[in-house]
Amino acid sequence: MLGLGSVIPGISYLNLCCCGWGIVGGCLAAYLLIRRSPARPVTKGEGAATGAFAGVVGSVINLIIGLPLSLLQWNSLIAQMEQRADNVSDAASRQMMMQIVATMQNHPVLIALAVWVVFAIVGISVAALGGLIGVAFFEKRKGPQYPPSEPPSSTGFPPGYAPPAPPPGGPQRTDEAPYGASDPPTY
Image 1: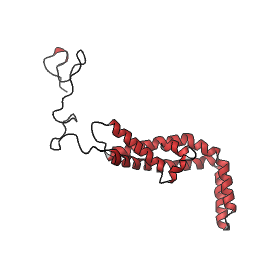
Image 2: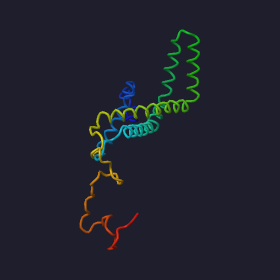
Image 3: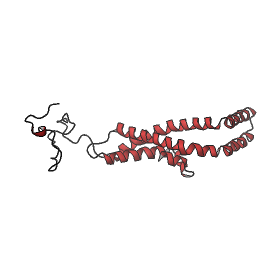
Image 4: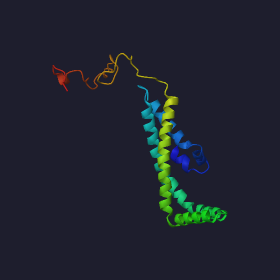
């Protein structure tokens, strides 16, 4: 969401509203994580990590698609900046703007990469925030799925949980002795 929403002309303006695509992408990633986790609630940290990962993916998409698009439009951007510099009445400000335009003309790829790095840092941070918001909004399960007085066993399952028996002819259970041995295996 972050990557494609940021490079498609027109809808990319949602980023002007508090980095909207980053928040939407992080929320969506947290929502999908919650749907895939039926056994236990998703923590805020997991939501933030999932959102940050969505931000990384979005930043890479922006690098692959957005950077070449901005380089294709580079000359029109330079022309706009020169026109704005001509409209500035202060000579010192006009001189500074013309130096920026000259730098942009001489190093377009370097400037575009620097802009992308700033976008990536902000995008990843905002997507992590979106993941936190997504967990707060979509996660309805609270706390562990077993009574608080009984901690989970060493296997991570609630006390008294027994895995289902395998189907006939299926794999042998791990609590039975292998291959007809009399003692169960020790680990």
